Image 1 (tube, rainbow, N blue to C red):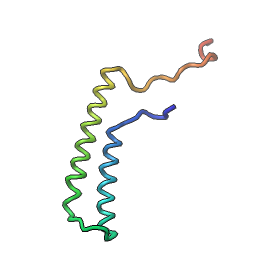
Image 2 (tube, rainbow, N blue to C red):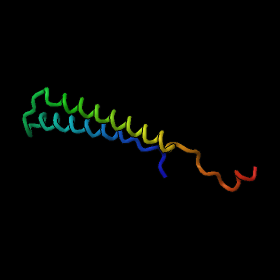
Image 3 (cartoon, rainbow, N blue to C red):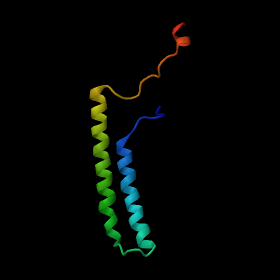
Image 4 (tube, rainbow, N blue to C red):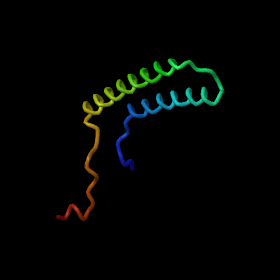
Length: 80
């Protein structure tokens, strides 16, 4: 059972920032040469995509009525 609802927008944002970190780490480690401005489109594009995914997820959940619900009650709760 999940402890929280899945939020794909945050996943996309995390992946975009992880890609930016890997690009800078590879440059710092000497694996490749990266100009400083290369990461800007990755971060901005990733955050834009994350916002779009979060917006669409919210619309889908609002339309289908999905989201957080109360946990199932046990038999002991039903007797009161």
